Figure 1 (tube, one colour):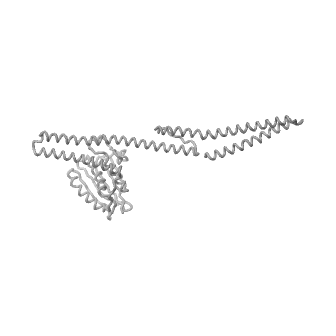
Figure 2: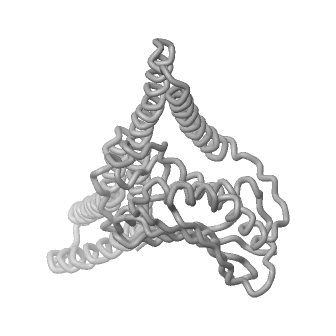
Figure 3: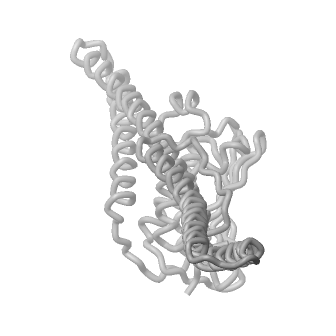
Length: 361
C-alpha cells in the first residue's frame, strides 16, 4: 500500500472510528441511563450522564487519534531513519552493508533506489581501485622498461669511451645495439603519447574513404620482409567478393593492426611462427580484419580483460618481453573512435585470433 493511500485511510479512520465509538457509547450509556431512570429522571442525574458521555467521547477521540497517528508515523519514520543511517554509511565510504527492501510503497522504492546507488558506488570504487592498481603497475613497468634500454645504452657508451671497442666490427656492433635500444625507447614513448592523446584528448581522426583490400595488401607487403628476418611467416588473403570501402583514418587503422601484429610477435614462442592476416565480409557492407597467430595463446580468464588499460595477462613474463601494456588498449580506443568493434578468441597452446569490425559505406 502506498503512503498516500495509508494517509487517506488513516484520516478516514480518525473520523469514522470516533463516530462509531460515539454511537456505541451513546447507545450503551442510553440503555444504562434508561434502566436507571425508570423511577423518574432528576436534573442532577441527567447532568451526570451528559458529563460522563462527554468524557467517554473525549477519551475515545484521544485514544483513537493518538493510536492511529503513532501507527502511521512509526510506519513512515522508522524506514526513513533506516535510510538516513544507510545514507550516513554510504557518505562515510562504507559500501558493503546492503540496504534491505521490505516494503512496496514509496519508501520501498526509495530504499531500492538507495540500494542501486550503493551498488553503483561500490562498483565505481572497485573500478577506481583496480585502475589505481593498474596505474601503479604501469609506473613500475614503465620504470623497468625505460631503465633496461637506458642501462644498456649507458654500458655500451661507457665501453666505447673506455676504448673497449678495439675493432671496427666491435664498434659497429656496439653502435647497432645502441640504435636498437633507442628504437625501443622511442616505441615505448610513442605508445604512451598515443594512449594519452586517444584517452584524454580524443585525437581527431583524419577520415578518408579507403579500399580496405588494397590498403591491407599494401600493408602486408610492407611487413613481409621484416617478418621474414625474424623467422616469422606472414600470410594474407581476402575473402571479399567485391570491393569494400570504409571510412577510416589510414594512420590510426595501421596503428591498430600493427599493435596487434607486434603483440603477436612479442609473445611468439614458436621458432617457425606464423601470423595470418585476412579480410572477410560482414553484415551491412562491412569488413572484418582478422589477425591470427600460432603463439602460446591466452588463458580464458584473461581474455575478457585483455583490452583494458595497463592489463597484462602474465605480468612476470611481460617484464621480460617489455612493453607498456597499452598496445591492445590503444587498439580498442581506435576502434571505438571508428564506431567499430574489436574482439578476441584464444586457446592456450594453439594461438590467438583478433578481429576488427569496420562498417562499410
